[in-house]
Length: 348
Image (cartoon, rainbow, N blue to C red; front, side):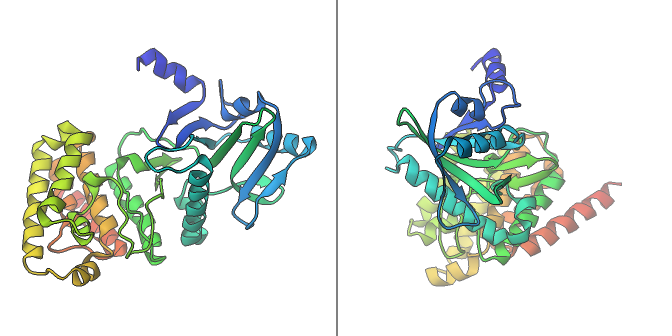
């Protein structure tokens, strides 16, 4: 895409297209073809609101109700709307199934974060309309076309990296998540955004309890997890290498990745030659997988943002250690804060 096309795309209020759908700026006050303008251009038959504080949907069918709600959308300046795509050939899911799965997941994550949800998440419901906490909606147009839409907080996915703040804030989020007996399973640079002045995790589709071995980005995933799912040792170790080459060949061919991969590979050999029972391994590592992903995210950030490797690589190695894994986000946060403080003092 040319620079001119990118500028035009930004001006239209269209933020991008992911695997699940197209994302728009919601507000009519934004320039160009925002979601509000996109929907308002069609005559709406009815709207079903999916809300966090009710089990059933809330139907808006009269012209008055629909117009009142559209005026409410008109006033929103910090909300994005994701329109779900048609059937996914990869998963076989319909837009409704994919949308309702995301709404259900977001409800669960909001519950896990409790009073910290607004601070830590981008999936917090939007409020201000009839005392509802609105997460998404199903829109039926007069033409018969249906739209499934999820709401979120508008954030930036492109930013200057403040690595110290980045690490501390993501680990602070994991401390709360782990206390609720949950893990993200897909921590990576693409799933961390900047909202106002805070780094936040997004994309909770792979999240689940500790013993659910869900998989996200393969180049960030601890090979121990693949082994626990039944992959032979040599395959478990090679998944990260192969995936990194496919996703980012420059990263895969760098000395940085080679050093990290060699370290991980050697440590896996040491551990698996000592402990072969998968039940024992799961007990040893079940709470370490998100922390490992934070470490691999830091490694990729060193490459992507040209961070000071002398400063951050030793810290990354602590977070991804397989021989001496960190078993809690609280301990990882403590380790990071202590290291950064010590490094700063030593540098002065």
